[in-house]
Length: 469
View 1 (tube, rainbow, N blue to C red):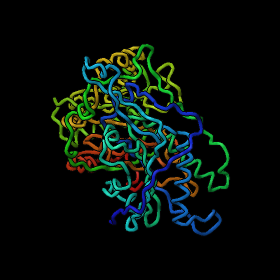
View 2 (tube, rainbow, N blue to C red):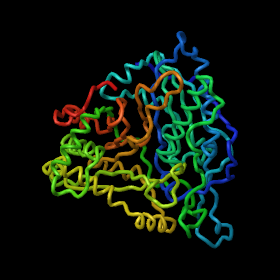
View 3 (cartoon, rainbow, N blue to C red):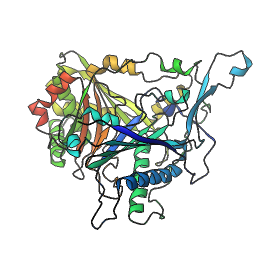
View 4 (cartoon, one colour):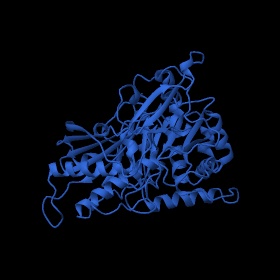
């Protein structure tokens, strides 16, 4: 399979569509994500037509068109063209207080990076025809191998896009600093970019974007110190132990049809009939199906504790957080059980554990955690994750995110893939399926030997659709 070559790099410096603040002070939700890798997602598009009824777009014109629409989208998300900065805490100038740092987002307009790359030896079939994701996909993403805090030292952009021309398609990728925003905001930017691009191709580029303006004003609890001073003398102290390199993983992309997901949901609810007090959702049933298969694939001992971590969106769950909020607004929850019980008590029981984990979200407790965080800040550690990864799963993203609506003007996406960011053993990304309402897809990362056993597991794979997607 061919290599990826960089053709050009440039900074896109947009004009803001509203009056942005000079500085955005980050919330506990934001700050705790500066020690993880960037969000990296992208869509595989068909090759733009050069003949026929649609407007013809030659290769050079495609890249310039995408750069222009990217700039317009950045105008609505102007802080994403800014820079993270660390300054001394407010009490550090008197010499009498412990060292502290304030990490904030400066809306300086210094730009987001736009990369043009080519991979003439890579075809659409190379990416969609195999069960396992080829490693070349990771080369489609910029800002690779960086934690969020790494953007501070070199004043690196918090967002970057890469457009990679393939032999017969185009891969459009985004990388976004996770300390700046979460997956919901990420996909809203992607949706805005594709809509602007699509309308421009159709000759309707001057019209207003259909989505509401993002809300960049950060949401803080009453009484929370603003800005938050972190009790560290340097950025590196925040990170703590770094992983020199992540342990090797293999990843696969699995598609589940609406009918398959419906059957899993029905089975899970039937098994818990009379015992469950709420309905198990389609996603909970699908993730439970994976959890049980992962326990088998990893050959966990019956008494080995296994954990399933979930991200719970707080828009709509926390009073005062706007729907169009453009920062981080997620809480973490986890279900835990001995592996033997996950396997022996059936799909319904494992799904019910996940159901209760999500249902246990309590706004009062969430507010208490946010209120206490500035006094005792904690950060996810990739090194710590790696130490327990072989017994855990962690699912991010959501099947509610609009992935396949990202038509840039010459056809809907063929599929979606993610970059190397946060790719540890047990990382699972969920997407909407490409076949319409109800279908879903999972991108699963496991240790190579475990993944080989997972995709050879007849019970698990019976629910999986076509291996090309």
